[in-house]
Amino acid sequence: MHRTAWKEAWRTITGSWARFFSIAALMFLGAFALVGLKVTGPDMRETGAAFFDETNLADVTVTSPMGVNEDALASVDGATAEFGYAGDATVEDSLTTLHLMSTPEEISTFSLTAGSMPSGSDEIALTSELEGSYNVGDTVVFNDDDESPLATRSFTVTGFVRSAEYLDREDIGQTTLGTGQLDGFAAVAPEAFESPVYTMARLRFAETAGFEPYADSYLARLDEYQDAVEAALDNEADSPYEVQDRRDLQGYLTYGDSADRIDAISQVFPVFLFAIASLVSLTTMTRMVQEQRTTNGTFAALGYSPRAIRRKYLLYGISASTLGGLIGVGVGHTLLPTVIFNAYQEIFSFPALQLGFYPLISVTAVAIAIICTVLVAAIVATRELNEVPSQLLLPKPPATGTRIFLERIRPLWRRMSFTQKITARNLFRYKRRMFMTVFGVAGCTALLILAFGVLDSITGVVNRQFNQIVHYDLIAVAAQQPEDEVESVDGVEDATSVRFEQMSVRLDGESIDQEIRSYFRTPMAKTSRWRWPALRRCMPGTTCLEQVPRRRTRT
Figure 1 (tube, rainbow, N blue to C red):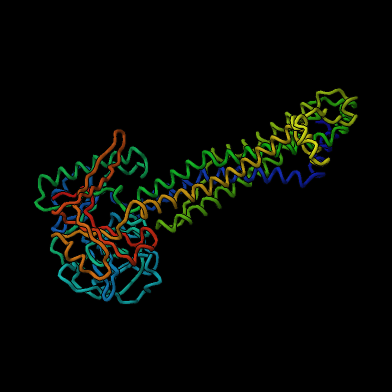
Figure 2 (cartoon, rainbow, N blue to C red; figure 1 turned 180 degrees about the vertical axis):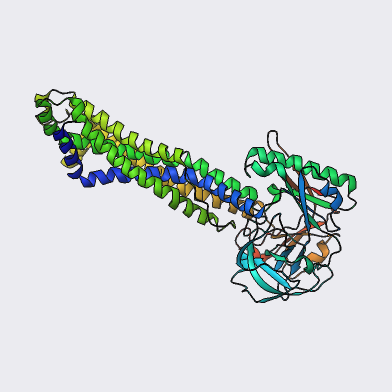
């Protein structure tokens, strides 16, 4: 490009900073949304994988109140087994119930968030969710009853921990103590238990070292591992046991599904933003080319080719879109994933987000931003420069006005003011501007409706489930029919005896079992549904407690 043309290109940028930065800002938003949403899912999965590797999360866990068979589990091919103790206990003078586990050495270890791990038989590390309710050095005393698995009742808090086996902050699990719902977990030294046998075993398979924790190939392997463990126990075990894999852990699959949902959103949301950015860029570049019509005619008359004149607009578009795209890539890799992950941290318990850099996504975002701007600039400039220099030196004549449809409706047209008539004619005279305005407003409105629609859909499902479908406040499981005793409890409005059955099914092509719970009203029932009038207006889900057997239980 000739030196004079370079100067003119630079003058075009510096002479319209507001226009330049508006285009850059639009491309920033597009790149920010594309990169931010595209990398959030992988960042979340990478954070989960790093946490699972850090704690060496078990692939399969076996529990039995009567004791696990060490010899049988140690013989499972390709598996490393570690044995320990577990049990539930209720804090004295409260309904707070904790799931206590002995500290493992290698498999499913705890991640320390504050203080230190327990070393003595009277020391305990509580879940990080209880930090604030308790401090290091406080004393925790548990109830002394026949079901207690502990050798001592009083413990000194040494620290707070996080566990990959309990990712869900709210749903820790069910218990037969207290309210029926676990309020947290805790780690104690193995010496704190008085059980003569190990009540749990964690198994880690060597083959899983190279698998992504949420890959379909890994989830399919879990079925093979469960079958291998159950086969070994079927031959040797003489007591009831329960076999679980990672999919049964509280929050494990839910966290992976959340990352997948972000991936799905990333397929749609950035498209709207880039489409709107392209429309606005079209309007902006069209106006800029028309404003410089006389200047372009002068350059053409001096012998500059249309290609040389067009370059300044291409340079303008490349500069604005590259600047906005690069900033959007940088901020998208850090800000949006952090904001989304912190929102999910209200549900899940994970360490800090693992931020990664994804070159392909970054290059794609910048390339789309450049194409949206440069392509528009090339089309507008080429159309304008097709005229001869003598025509470019003259102002562009306005679009020819024609009779519009409203003029044919004489009663309506006569009652319109002069300003209204001019506005109506201009709408159809400049159809491109009209359609761009309509599409831009429609796109923005669609995004708003989408956001509110998702919110209403989620809240609507919860209200319908717990207000229209589920009419009970609590489910209790008893060895004998409890209806007569339940109805005598103060505040109970109604109690219905039902029989409870649970089964697991798997759809074709799926690697995950689905639980089906069936309730049958029968005189021989062992389950009762209670309803308290005082709980009717509580938030859905806050008082519905279930004490039901978990799946894959062998008796």
